[in-house]
Image (cartoon, rainbow, N blue to C red; front, side, top):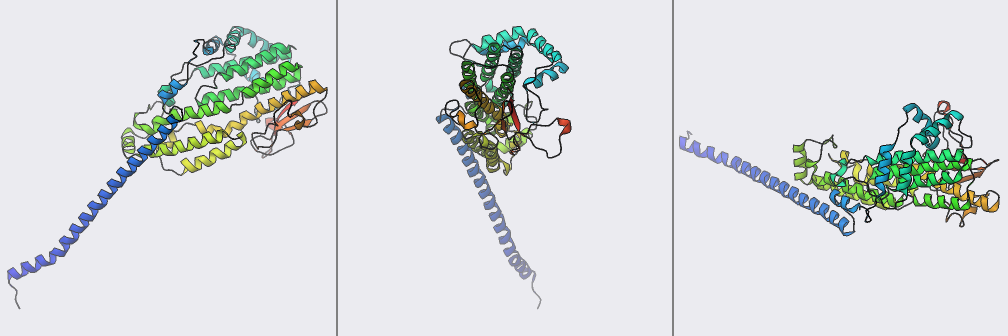
Length: 465
């Protein structure tokens, strides 16, 4: 049968109808899916920004600053108008730096880590080194006087503008470090000369100078202050090998080292770290690229922030810092594992283009034990010396120092166990197991050129008299 042209057109239209309906359905489904995606993005963006803002407001409600501007106002200037910072910074301006060669000879006198070449604190400095030390102290006498004047002032606030955020310039840090080292080297000089009074005054002033950073809410300031207490501890070991102190002098130094516990300084630094990092998550596209030199392109950051992803990352970061603050209130021996666990929980598995810009800040807590162990060992040295002065003999065990000279036996910041104490044929030792956590019985570090692969040792203080 032959069909007419009209019938053919009708059949063609009928065949195309299902196809048109299918495309209309696909288009509507695609549009609905896109609208759902847009709605989901808007909901997530609203949720992330709302939650980030809620956490920031909770910080403020707890009485803490949340932004760099608030942090700068929180770091108060002295109400009296007399500021120790002026004298300490003046000392920095007056400081006469030795040559590199001379400094490499002077620094090991007071600066030692577990990995340094071994030194003998009971041995007198050789004449050449003694002359170099005398020259160093003499040429810096004016700077030292300024430090002593500054240490007589209780209030301190360094002139740094924290409102600038993570890129804040802190030139005073080097002045504090120089001052601390000057005073510790001067303490050694007086001890070598047999002058305990001036040696005690110098080491006490050194602890005071580094303590001026305690209220500065920046992590690098806390680390310099903690390092200063470590240097003072090494200085004390040498001093106790060279001179005998009175009970009053020993008690004064006990209180000075106890004040350098670092606990409040660490909490203050974490509060500051949180504030200084706030702009990274609030408006990353506006950050100063001279400091954040590995930031993504500005256009990408605009999109990232527009989708609420910066706020999402900020929630994770705030959770991490809050957990670090809780960890900081626990014994130092738990800091390393605690921070690693917090980092894994809040940061490590999250996809972010911003986390790479987070400063070392809270992660520096992992190394807190390295600075804490010499300080705690110094407290034991002082307690032992007080016991010896009172009883005419050394204690048989560290427990004998409690409660008269120590409220409790200080723990080794590396393994959480009590610090180790041993009587020697002449004198005694106090030691920490160090970063490897292994007790080697008070074994001291061998010379660097004689160390074997996988060889371990402890961090040891000795008084051999």
